Image 1 (cartoon, rainbow, N blue to C red):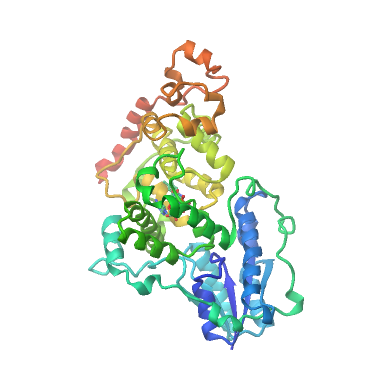
Image 2 (cartoon, helix red, strand yellow; image 1 turned 60 degrees about the horizontal axis):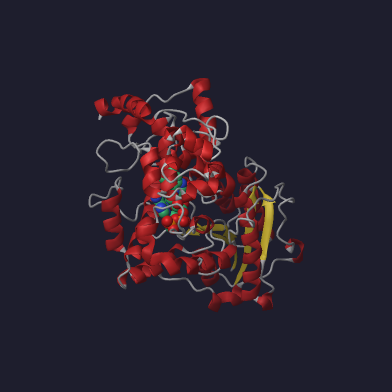
Length: 484
Ligand code: FAD
């Protein structure tokens, strides 16, 4: 049989489940990636993710060539509507089956259903498999067979279910002779960014490593400090986390490899590895929430939170603009927004602090923040982003009794005590003392003067007073309390 592997968010050769499946089932396998116009067209013209994908495809093409040089294997890359192009390519290449790793986002499911229908009309199979997660939506269920809506029992069951088989790697190398190069008319280099209608970004200046090798390099670096993850992960000025989010997003690293490594290290006594594994389980959890409760993309997970009245109108728009551009007057929030705007990354602690500020200090709809992050984050993933924002808004799967309100100043004092992170992103505040940097409006005029800071000129006055905002939020959320 002839098969076609359609790479999507699994841009690697090592432990790639769909590639392995295609190679075990077909004597001859072609490889394709589609820059899907349906996804690319709405994006801003400079987007680090498009550049990351492009660079990772160059690496993938090379890796495939190295796997099967005798058959001149390589990647066909097209810029088209995937739902048209895959069936067309399958017909041209006379394949009997198209293989792909399952994608769980609603738009992807719609696209895949359409592709499957078109392929089946041409008697071509569409064979999908699990690759992105350890356990899919309905694999970890409560005793009564229903999906979990709370993390801890989900995690306990997830861990109890886990067997070596679940993290077993797929080795495609012994099957590489089945990989084939495409017919000459498709042998084109990976399109450039400008061919795709995009401009280059600051991705390489940021030194974000791309492709499978980039993912492995980050993993190796993280291995050096994984053991202290539980103590460093909350401090944005420290290299505590792995920065592997973008690699998990585009599948340049295998989740099975990460879970296996974390488990081994945890078994050897590493608390840091155990805490990190917990985060990888959160990732599966949010994938499961999206699969089992698809209403979360538009509505609160907990329906009673739909009663909340968010701020609206031009004043709300102005507040939102100030938040997006890092002009709230709260240094940690503004530094966090500068980080996402300049780099596409935001530290997890800051996602919580900046998110909470939007919802609980400015009274704005969490979906506005969700949309902004979706546009900006290099590691944007619908499931984790939605889960994170619902957590921030207290409308999600959280066991907390009612809801929490972060104090942006005490969060700053606790997690950036010397203001190192703030100074990095807000150099205009660099000369303020370790005390004043968290709340410049409380500093003595002489100190501000000595640090060359004029509030309202060099740095904004606070947009709201936290205590007043807190009281308003309590009132706003009272509708939930009454209903709950
Ligand atoms: P590490 O700390 O090294 O964690 C390793 C991996 O575990 C991450 O790459 C990620 O895949 C997973 N992970 C870690 N924390 C979480 C979590 N709370 N929920 C789900 N998965 C997690 N994560 C995304 O991958 N994409 C998003 O779009 C996203 N949006 C978020 C929005 C908000 C408001 C919040 C509060 C969190 C969001 N997160 C998101 C979760 C988390 O902030 C990021 O996964 C993490 O900061 C990525 O950095 P890292 O790779 O260095 O993480």
